[in-house]
Image (cartoon, rainbow over all chains, first blue to last red; front, side, top):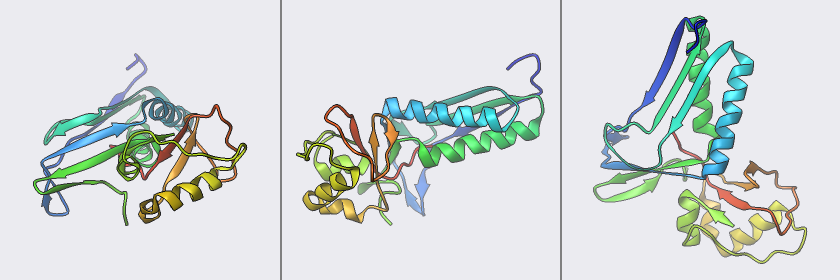
Length: 118
Length: 76
């Protein structure tokens, strides 16, 4: 934050124990790292353009994550909360659409790459 | 060429070699990959990245480009 900040909006993504009613044992994340960082930078730049953002953080883990662990953190500080909430939502929503990171759900009886098939 | 997520499973590894004519397009690369790996066609969609940027189908490939197959992303 900065002395001008009036609030920090934080989104913390956590590994859920089920998807569509099916128990999830753990998640595995994979990234195309140089491109993922580049795409995250674009999202951050766009957030700074669209809202009076003061500080912005995007964090994403890769590898095996157990239920309850934290794959993603977004934090945005602004002078006022409306911009912080809006920018934070924009960053997480856009990250899910454009950043080359993939999530595999691991079940007791198999595994599936999320969103790959219709 | 690099492969990630389900594309890695389809190609049987995180990198795959394909022969392409000099100055082929992304579209021609996709077609030759789909001939060789028909499971690609069952994906919701997939993109090709050239040198860490999403590419259009019309873009031309050169021998020095880093090519990556980007199946539907699912981070977060």
